[in-house]
Image 1: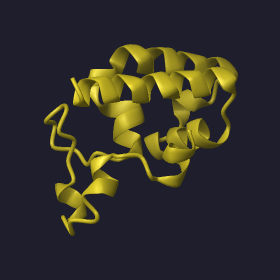
Image 2 (image 1 turned 135 degrees about the vertical axis):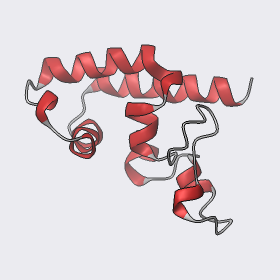
Image 3 (image 1 turned 45 degrees about the vertical axis):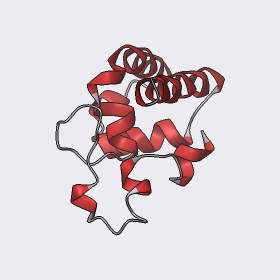
Length: 104
C-alpha cells in the first residue's frame, strides 16, 4: 500500500525513469495497449487484473456512492487515501497478481 501511495512500486513509470526513458514511452508491458504503466493504469485499466479490480471497485462503491461520478484520477486518489483493511487486502492481491504474471 505504501509503495502505491509513494510511487515506488516497480511500475514502468518509476523503473524506466532511471533509464531516462521519456514518460510517454514508459508503457505497460503486460497489456500492450500503449498506455503509460502508472498507478492509475495498474489499479483501474490494465486488463490483466480485471477480476481483482472488479472486487476492489465494488468494495469502493459500497463505501462511497459518489465514486461512479468521479474522473479516474480522483477515484485513484480515494482508493489510495481513504482505504480500509479490506481495500488494502484487495490492493495487495492486485499487486500479487501482477508479480505472478511478470515473474512466471
